[in-house]
Amino acid sequence: MDNLKNTFYNLPFSHIYVEEEALFSPLAQKLIKKTAPIVIHHYMDIFGRTHQNFSIQKESPALILAVKHGNFIYPGANVCQSFGNSYFYYTSFAMNCPFHCEYCYLQGMYSSANIVLFVNTEDYLKELAQLLCQHSVYLCISYDTDLLALEYLTGFLEHYLCFAAKKHKLVTELRTKSAVLPSFLFSLPEELKRRLIFAYTLSPQEVTERYEHKTAPLSARLSAIRSAGSAGFPIRLCFDPLLRIPNFEHIYGNFISQVHAALSNIPIQDASIGVFRISDSYLKQMRKNLPESGLLQYPFENTQHVCHYGAHSSEMISFVKQQLSNWIPEEKIDTLDL
Amino acid sequence: MLYITAALYEEAAPFLTALSLKKEPSFRHFDLFLGDNAMLLLTKTGAMRAAVATSSFLTTFPPQKNDMFLSVGTAACLNQSIPCGSAFILQQIIDAGSGRSVYPELIYRSPFPEARLTTVPQIITSAATEQNNASYKHIVPPMLYDMESSGIYEAAIPYFLCEQLLFCRIVSDHAVDLTSLSYSEIRKKVTLYITEHTETMIRWIQNIEKNRKAPKQLSEKHIEFYERVCAALRLSTASQAELKRMILYLYLNNIDYLSDMEHFLSLPLLSPCKTKKEGLFYLGQLKKHFL
Image (cartoon, rainbow over all chains, first blue to last red; front, side):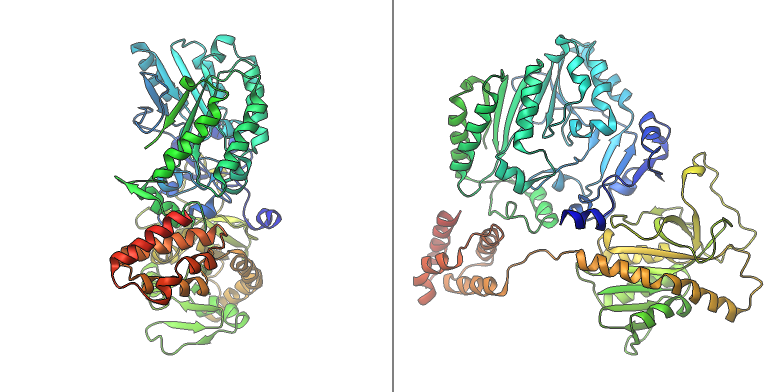
């Protein structure tokens, strides 16, 4: 099947669309050395087309290089975990993710699976610097994408960290399902490392294999966590979303034991637990995109336009929290129930 | 089913032969040819006429999720280094009238190189020059000119997903070399150029059709069981949808629920519920048991 995919579809990123405005940016110039670009006026000419097929585009996503206008840094949403940080913000250097998780809200949010990279990173940093003049900032830089997984293409993280090194009031969260750790991370100053939280999303290998397509296997993620933790980066473990699968307690119980065994010597800053929950409008779109997903066809309960597992949600969270508390102190475990 | 459009009979002829398509006289306003697995429409020249014909065609024969659409034809290319007879798949279609661009999806690996195309209202003559003087001109693929593509794209896209539409164009002239030929010589050349690529195009699209899998759906056995349960429990429309979602969930997760559910509902299946309330009770029990 993989062989068929290799010959039937174009390779991922075989096509690069570049806004005229972004064409002479260093990133565009680097990427179009290998692939002739298709020059476009605005990224929405491609990204916002009608009648796109999200799941087929995931087989061969295109890259879209664009210049972002308007706001660059946004206040964190209430449904996202702030871990007690007062000045909680997020930003998106990119739209969409190279991975294909069946439960991912991006399928409901965007009509395209193509990946947009905003090349004007300096504008982001300028706005962030202004914010830092007013107060400290806790910034999540890998929402709506997986920045670490795209680093080999973009170099965004390295560029961002050069800026962050001089901004001591800035704490950054980097959320990922990737197992890659670029070598420059290990030579960062210790003080900067302490302000860069690696937030790894973890799921049982059964879930990763079945629903988190193209992501790193659990063992590789655990190995990356060990490397990052040993190098002095704060580690956040995100058990989110928990999925209601057959033999939930058995599979998640074994999984937590496996994670504990692999990371017993690594200091864990905190952990978060959340069950799968999604807005009803996103779920409708996701079911349309992935009609074969057994996960998405679950008859969810709908409370004020949020679809969830109903009473099962609390049970699932309690179970995982109890398993985790054998190892991580309860005050370090943040739960997001409905 | 493969939906094909071509402006002229000379462009369509190689496909009519290769796919054994026969004229369908009942489609009265436009020339339509039908076969077992393909249909071909002659749109005539011009974006407006092509859009009208395509729209009428697709309204009469609504495509399904697994169908493909091929727009095939000839185009002019001002770049003399590209020989006549070269075939391209389109990555961008510019409507000269509005200046608007559309971008056909490029998901499937194609046997043809890519080109951009401008749809113009008149045949391009030797006096025409490339308007694109942008500083990135050296990195973009060749520009072709035709008179239909933008109209066909706009007419077809409401009926298909982007990746179902394929646009192939074959260079017929450089806006100068056809003027010295008689009309019958031009027609022969057009057919000859298209013939050279017909087999490759058909093989390519058949391969796409073969490998595009239809989404897994409830089989007849499961639908029949669902209908029996709906009737036995006297479910309302909303409750029927709930039950269907549950059955689909169990089916897609390969949970062998049929015999278990049949056993669970043996009483109402034998003697249907007298009230909707009774049916709702059973539905609640099903949820508790199976979810």
